[in-house]
Image 1 (cartoon, one colour):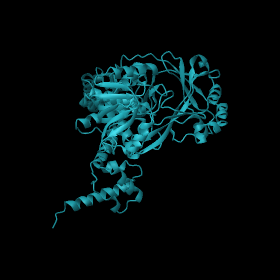
Image 2 (cartoon, rainbow, N blue to C red):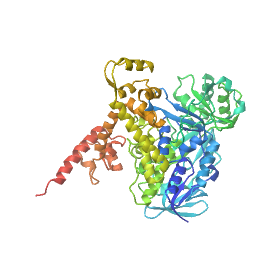
Image 3 (cartoon, one colour):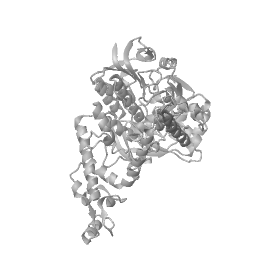
Image 4 (tube, rainbow, N blue to C red):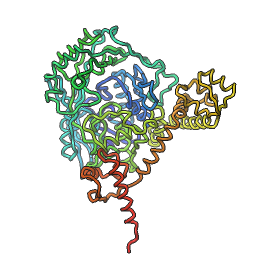
Length: 627
């Protein structure tokens, strides 16, 4: 059976990859272990968060589906870090995990050019280091020129609950054991990581009166730029906050000898920024309590997820520690928490297109690349899907730079630096985060989605209108002024702003700390008819004009370095001043440009300076006429 592209895995990465491939006209096969689990939300029932919300907005701007699905199936919407600047704010939504899965599965099953088969991929078939297909556990041989692996936690997945071990990709689901061996046989470097989940509690057994209620935003903001923002009014449920206490910590600490994390039973490295509760207690013994967020899993709110209580402790210990927590004294566990170990491919084995360097036509996306999180996975899946299609059509690859998108930062970090622990996106990883805001993802990226055919005409026209109104609005603010006349001082006083003593541009007034959208419309009636999204952009761009200008200057300097190519035949070992470690890494990654070299972990600014000087000297020598 012949296809253009085969996607292995039906999680968040697999869905975005398969839908992109199919929508761009390629005959696509999605291979998944359980068809009913396509789109399953394996861990916490939420999408987005700090930096993760940026990824979802970027996926949406490129024409992906995660944002749309979240808006339709969300049950609480909040903007995190609202008190801080727009660059570090993050959208987060609780979702109905059952409805989300059904929605995504139906999108997949109803898509043209996309077939689904419920099988386990066992081996990658190659011909002269080129992927040509897969063989499944049913001995079916599927042929394709491009294979995208999005295997999640299923590669030799091993679940731990106390002393108990069970081979599984998710609780109750078969692992993909043979595929790991196939990848190793192709010469790919594999490692071992660990992640986990927490217990789910029967809602009837929770005393919410002993917890702090946490409601969604009064005026919720959708994830998708395709959702009608002004009329967005989703059904919202509250979450609740409670805390661990000294008794909880005593129970956990007294059972460290039964914790797989500490007994040597677990070999894989866990996520440093989302540790299990036993790891938290061990690392932060000075803390008397830890936040726990009690979150509904569905609209019916029959089960609650205890965010912050990830664990692999034995069932009896899980029950005891949960009963020690305020509001959970009579809690009944519906599903116990567990840890899971799985194989992953060293992401430095990949190019920026997410294609493996050793096997042409073989792409990897999601947790197989060492990341953690639905959003990171979906972003990679979309990029892998787009690049597989572009490669089939013999077109230039699609590579987002670090100054263009969080997705660019994510992939660049992975393929140049690698990871020894599950990689999670943070705003601090993005050097140009003031430019890479959630609110302008459509302005930054939708032209790519439109060019590829993933963004429709309606959204494209909306973005063009937003760009036009933004330009007109900023120009108006910069070219119009207020003088300190009695009328203007009275006007400023009326809208709650301090008076002025000199002639000043409207932009300078808008840049004041507490200046808001309501004041903007009064100060500049010209922009009142503009779209809400345009007015919000004008406010942000005017407020942070100087900072944005500085970041743009930095980017221009970076682009200069980006264009300095490193000769492919350069002998790094012969360059005086480079340490053995730097030489070894340059030989390993063979970066095409100085900028690529600068992004490799361990390559110092001093090494970049030496390289730049050497390249200039080398260029002059080559250009000097021979006698």
